[in-house]
Length: 201
Image (cartoon, rainbow, N blue to C red; front, side):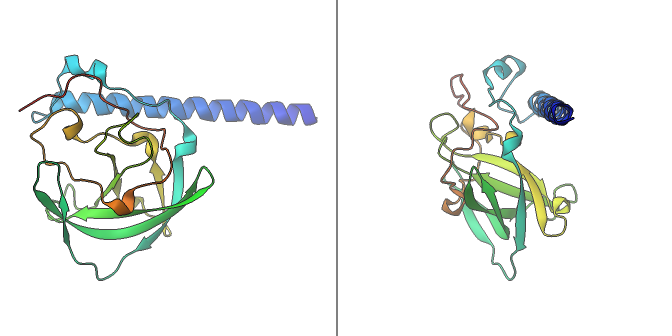
């Protein structure tokens, strides 16, 4: 009986891992397809072979506690082209990953808040100990939605972390991740370094 229980648990775990990998693979195919559809994209179909990702790992899909921030003032988040964009801090999220207690800040783009399509968008820029080595030196982003918050919790999947357009070409206004979102751990999930030569607009 004990053997059957162990076998069942192993098969269930394997099935979950396979389903998770398939889900991330589908997400990445959609991510690549979006470059081709976007007229302002820095990449063309022939460039997609130079996109690389860590293997899907459910360890990096975490549930975080959400603390909504009140009475926040907007501020200018610097961008890599020397300008800035106006954001406001929306929430602090806390979670445990690889045995460490971590915290990140979620932001809202003031300019996008008036657009019905992006009104609920939460912007999560971050750097970690892979930044500048295995991953883009300018940090990576994750997109979330206010509607994803349920009972003061939110799921953050670092497997969906992506590079800003600045990783592929100059001429874009990519926000610089604030120091408060510098994680003192390696996030070995999501998009890796782009391996073709950076383009110039």
